[in-house]
Amino acid sequence: MDKVIQRALNAKPYFIVFFITAFWFFTENHHELISNYQAFLGLSIIALGALPSFIHLINAEESRLIPLVPLHGLFYSIAYGIPIFVEKTNWFNSSTEAINHSLVLTIVGLVMLYIGYYGARHLLPAFRPIRFSSYSSCGDRHLFFLCVALCVISMLFEFSPLLRSIPSLNEIAVPTGFLSIGILFVLHITNRLQSWERTIFFCTTVLLLLVKLVSGLLALPVFVLMFFSILYWQMRKKILWLPILLLCSLAIILQPVKDQFRALTWYSESVDIGHYEKLKIFTEVGVEYYLEKSQSDEGANIEFDSLADRLAHIATFSVVVADTPQSVPYWNGETYKSLLTKFIPRFLWQDKPREEYGLNFGHRYGFLDWDDEITSVNMPWLPEFYANFGWKGVVFGMFFVGVLFRYFMMIYNNHDSVVDMVAGLAICFRLGLPESNLSMMLGGIVTYTAFLFVLLRMLTIKRRDQVVLYER
Image (cartoon, rainbow, N blue to C red; front, side, top):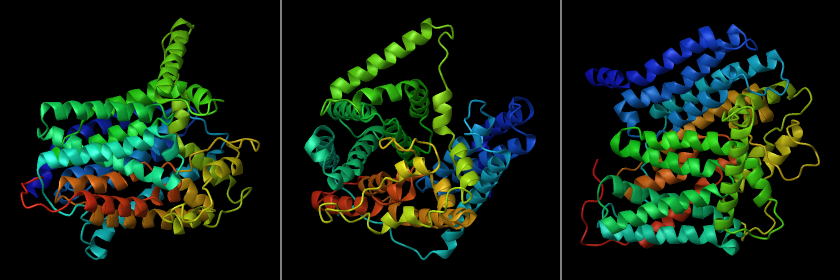
């Protein structure tokens, strides 16, 4: 009990900030477009979203786990609770009743998620964690060169248009890249890299961030920085504030110029624009945008409208609640069918259907014009549950996700070695941001696991000259 109290005291600065902010929002800052009832629901979502983080901080057993549910909860705080208090949030003309209904369903969904996750700890049978590597320890030099090999494999996919055109192979390059850079990061923060190896690590990290950035998907460099932050927390039990500040800066600075960059690269007549050219275009577009902003009457104020729309998934949810099933029929599980075949490589099934649920979702609910066959709209899990089965989908879907996350914590949370720890995190950490449809985010788990297991078993042959690799 004393340890729990001490952990709670150590965590109190974070929650003092939260409660002060909540009080300020509730009493002074909620604008005239929302009622006190909606403000109360918004604050409830924010508080419920922060609850797993608090439990993670004060509970020793939970703090050893990958913070998947804490990330999940914070996502709902940011994307479903905070937008209530942002005046720029675009509600797409949703009625007050639909907004209130979506807020209540979000609270119900979070409660069911936590019941499934924390309840399953005592109900699920014990599962042994997956051992991806064939040993629990090896020399640092051997591990470093293993990471270099994995980096090369990952970068081949990034810079080769031919390899990128093979969907099944291109997908498995993602966890390979995170695995290699993650192991190097752990070796770096534990001071086990030589100076020249540290230089390679920094250069590789910068290159990876730039490659992810010029893809035009801002979520990709955000994922890299979030990955580092989780690893740092796992190793040191401290928050790595610099990546968090970088995350916020990236989102704010690049969001207004993202669409123009995509128009010049994604929809360009050029067959394949190189990474250097993309970086040059992104820089020119950004400089031009902010020069114009500095010379305009608005001064140097940053335009937050697009960022508010990007984060406000509660607004999307309110549209789904308002239109289903009155004007849009239930999907009745259609978006989950691909989960049954997701693990089958495309080279084995030439005519395997492609997932276009983001496009279909945008058309069904009026987010896209019917003649738009290119743009995709994010379909987060809560709206997807409701679009398929209504409130029952939210209740049972979120409960299922909670149980599934507890199972993942059992099989992917292996602290026997750096390789196993980072491999498990590389496979499942992105589930903490559930802003794409369930089959897209869950479908690759089986493939990633099988690929990394085979690859690492091949690359990590047992050796007699083993030394301790990882100690907690």
